[in-house]
Image 1 (cartoon, rainbow, N blue to C red):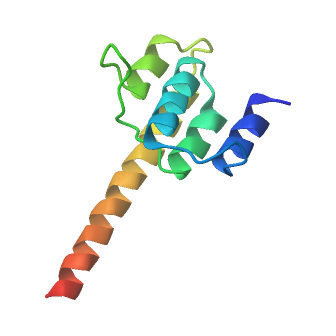
Image 2 (image 1 turned 45 degrees about the vertical axis):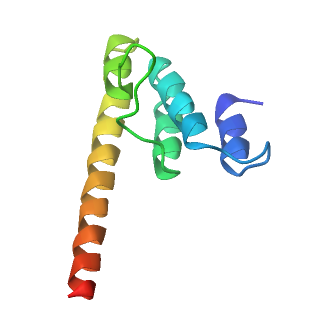
Length: 101
């Protein structure tokens, strides 16, 4: 079974409930290993694009430091999805504020 299949099973909670820490650790590992598909799936399930490892490095920093292909695919994926998540959260907050008024 491949990493993506294992990740999908984990995200579907087949191995038990996932914590925020689980998602963050998976995000850090996927970023270090250049697994763009895994990063995208983790972000879609709420992983924090700004989480930090023990040294204070974010997934973006780790992806840049470990880019083996030289094409920065994982970086583009993280930036685009990360920015989209931030914008979506901002939009949701604005809508909630408007509804409260």
